[in-house]
Amino acid sequence: MFNETDAPQPPKVLSTPLEIAANLRQLLESHDPLIISFPERSQRFQSYVVHVDRDTGVVALDEMIPRDGEKFIENGEPFRVEGFHDGVRIAWECSTPLTITQIDGHRCYRGPLPEEVVYHQRRNAFRAALKLSQLVDVAIDGTYLKGDGAVRGKLLDISATGCKLRFEGNIEHRLQLGQVYENFKAANPLGLSDTMVELRHLHFEERINTTFAGVRFHNLSGQAQRKIESFVYQLQREARRFDKDDY
Image (cartoon, rainbow, N blue to C red; front, side, top):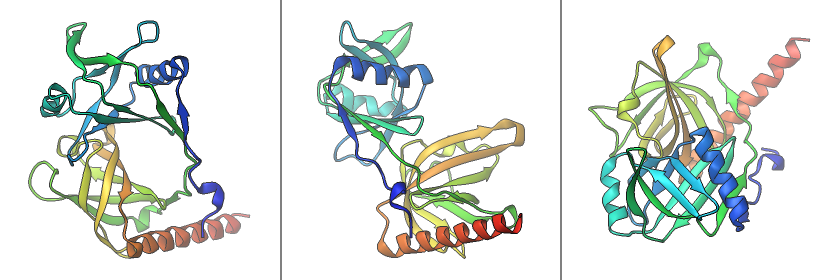
């Protein structure tokens, strides 16, 4: 149903300090958000690279959001760091205890540069946009959703791996980047219920009073995967037919 060129490309493992520092510096300069996860813990935390020094072999991460993740750093628990820069996944493991300190008056966690970094350039799966007259109703709910009741919005586009959503007003305070929400629903004709999604992007556009979110499907069942692929294929066919009608 989908071209093999849409499949993820194999990741590279970077192991030289030069390569590692250069990629971490990209995350630093672009202020790309990081997702921090601890083994055996379901909650995710957000941070940023705030300092990279290849000469001294040091990297520092910004204070975690939410702050209560700091107790796991204090306990010396190992964790995984994952960021995205221009569609490239940059990830590493941290098993060395970090020092809680400050840079320019801001709290941060300092430690050695990672010995290895996974660099994964991934091709984007075909992403099908919905016509404004056909936007599908969606809702997100789950254990880590803040506030009362699900957040409800519209499905803007979808691929085999994730989708883009739109919500009226500012809901940034209710969602957390990197968190997995276990109750994602999408009305017919997609017809998804109780699907797990991981929040990848979150942005409030004040000018139009709208929040945009990007989610990645998480641990899909075979039935849900088939529903999504069928829906994307249908949209793809409609888009091609529409393009032909233009000529």
